[in-house]
Image (cartoon, rainbow, N blue to C red; front, side, top):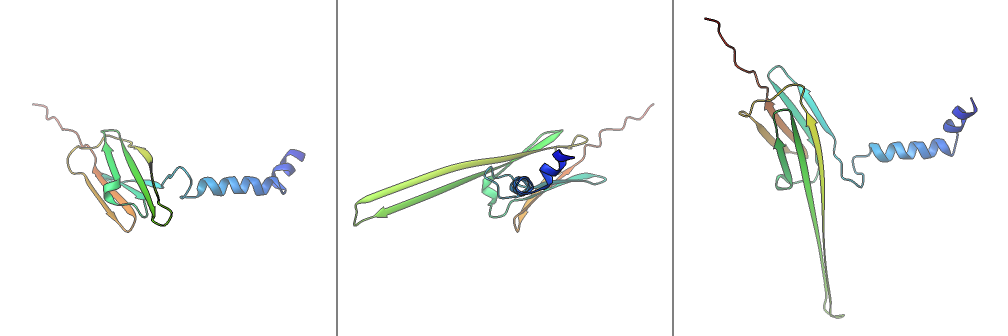
Length: 135
């Protein structure tokens, strides 16, 4: 009972709540992004929230049983201070990726991807296989 009180009273409750909020935030330091997989009768629909990302920054690697979404962010900063005769240049690159496993294999044909209003949508047709007729 006293152990339960320890985790449900301040300051421990506040610290645990802060940790939960940090990891549930979509803007954490690792640049993770939310991804959802929806299975339909003939395809899988993957949506990812990637606000502020351009399509040139996204790489989609598709395999029969899973796919990986990789986002590369490159930030450059240049400062040229003529009166002080100083010039500074900074460039940083960060990469985030998410892998999504499929419950069944996908067909290599008929894949579509689009990016609109910060939402990446990928549609992948399911592999229906071949039906063999017995003669």
